[in-house]
Image (cartoon, rainbow, N blue to C red; front, side, top):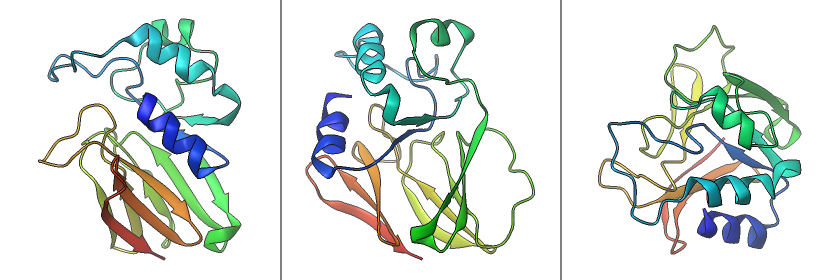
Length: 164
């Protein structure tokens, strides 16, 4: 989380979007040795005014008791002028998608594997994972700048990008 906050502050991004599983990542995943949910919640709370979050499959009501921003919504919707007013549908990715209009940008996490692709009239973005990357990918995050989604590792190397 510390590395993500460094990137967030240095990028001067207006919002930080968290796509679920904020404090716990489920019994199937080994947690990193340095993992500290109390410190993670403190760091997340320090950014509460800048966060947009959705519920992951490992969020629980007890998590909401220590977090000072809402984390129990299954999805969120944004419309961004920089993308021509397109709908951005944010969700964790463990539940089926609702009906969405062509051109919608679907942003999810769940698989922990980076994705930036257009398919069946939709744009799919998955930033990968900051804490528990999978599929042989490094820890990663995504930045939207102008009309380009860029997924990067923490050394600044571009993993993939998509301009829409």
